Image 1 (cartoon, rainbow, N blue to C red):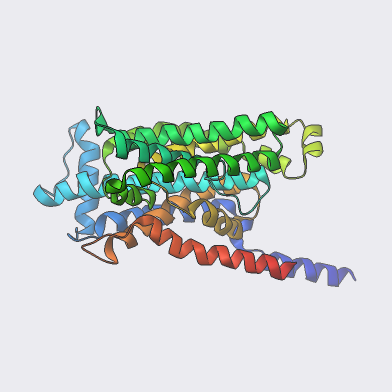
Image 2 (image 1 turned 120 degrees about the vertical axis):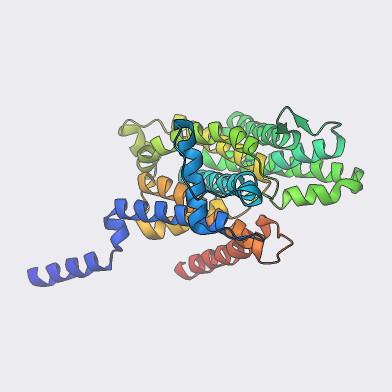
Length: 362
């Protein structure tokens, strides 16, 4: 019997993916995938750029403040395409993808719902209404170097989530089902208001729908400056909450006995994830399925521990959206697909597969 037990344990150990037993290996692989995806994003396009020259140019720009020049850097049109068009776009795609993925993983953990996504509490509906209002009515297009649409979308997303939290807390405290229902109610109301504005301003429908489907074609360095502080701070908070979410997963009573305050943890995670989501949609529009698909892929690689899932989602989400944006740029070149269309083509079948697998297990 002992031999049989040992043999079974050995087979189980073999069956466990190496990435689950060695999370550092998985993180290193995800980081490498992100770097390669970003390099592909700046190399490939209507004007192909030599890979070696791209790396040399980036090194030259990094070392130039130290007075060190690197020969062989791109010049003229090629340098402008790299530094003013592709590089900010690729960096923004990686930040947005990372933000949506980690916030999706956090929502799924805090609500104990594998089908939760970053737009669950009204962030998408609020951002959509904010962007629609300024596209339709704003007489100005920017505030300083920052476009007025990202600012309005950011504010709208925060208002939407804030209303859902206030309504949910007033109705039933921090319990997950109550917050989910509040988010659905707020999202429905804001979506109805957005539809009303659209119907009154049909001449702006093309621009509105272009934003709603997600777009990174007009990415600028100012967008990165706008989004990076929020993604950085709130993302760090989520990473620090990983082990507490693992404790919460066993139940509220057990978490309380282990020193974790369930209500306080939920509030912190929801606020941080919502801030990340608001910042992401402000500069990219509504890009669906990233926060749903990526955490599930990551759990297949490293298991269900949030201490592993959250940092992996950050890296894999960045790589995923950079590659999706690359597909959006080249598949119908010189025209571009909205990036939300690409992620929907990937995410919708994946979502259907999740439902099918869940039905089979029942």
